[in-house]
Length: 405
Ligand code: ASP
Ligand code: MG
Image (cartoon, rainbow, N blue to C red):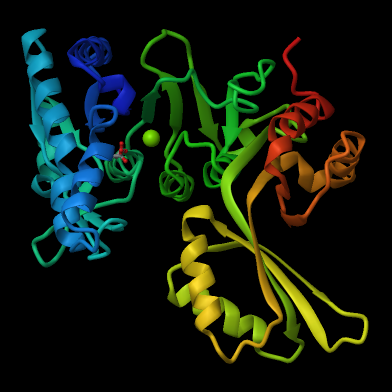
């Protein structure tokens, strides 16, 4: 007997047939006497619609009411799945986040889980009931409904898997697992059988929209065994595991791209102590995340150019903040939305030299100019002209020996 948490994303519960299909999968897991908790997302497209309605009725909306509205899609799918399970002879019941409860902080729209009640769920599991829970939501100390950020059902599922000490947390989606690159642009991309938590964390934050980044961080710190797999096929997916479980380590495991970034250059900034801190504190106060940064001083050392990237959606706000900051002296602000960030990721980089060099050489051979570079222990990212995204990703995929035969 095992204790399993299953999570089904929006495309897996997109309509009634899909929900019936999910019920059959859940039923199969219960057949071996397993204890099963199921988390569901809203039907595909529902949350987007709810967000739109909120923005239309109140552009500067009260975040507490935003959460009240956008959390509602999961209520429908949780109830429907419980019904589908009951109709196929499986004892099941549904819960909303607050009924468990998923206690969170008050950061509406991006709340963090503080504590999860496990008594009732544990009791129901032991009685043989399948517990269906609406993902993405919780309740604050103020007794208000909160949501965990877009894609948050992954985090709900991993968090409860950790709290219940589950044997596995299976995340069902519409792809067969984690790939070496986006199969839509790299036909030779391959599904990975295993990937390390660290690599998955980089992949998630670099724009591979498979798992919510926070769910991966949580799985890593609580050692939850996560599997990413498709609800439309019967193939094993990708296991997210500790590094020591991977015998044959690839130097590079995956290549990602993100086109939703924008580049900002502050030209001719006075080269005095405190300028960078001034710029980035202002941006942080405006809740703008800065990603890559480079600074280059002029030959006489008096001035410097400061280049960094922000999310494209934050570009206008960033420009306004910088323009109204009268104590940052600069000659011009140049912006460019037409950029893409390409990253190569792999834990094998720690022990292999020359990974960056072969990345730069590959891009040079294709005559692709590198605008900004940033690295971490297991990742190298470059910013290039967005026009060359596909070319760059495919060429790098070949360079690092990832192409399917
Ligand atoms: N339904 C929510 C969203 O679309 C949460 C989730 O699917 O994980 O972001
Ligand atoms: Mg998702």
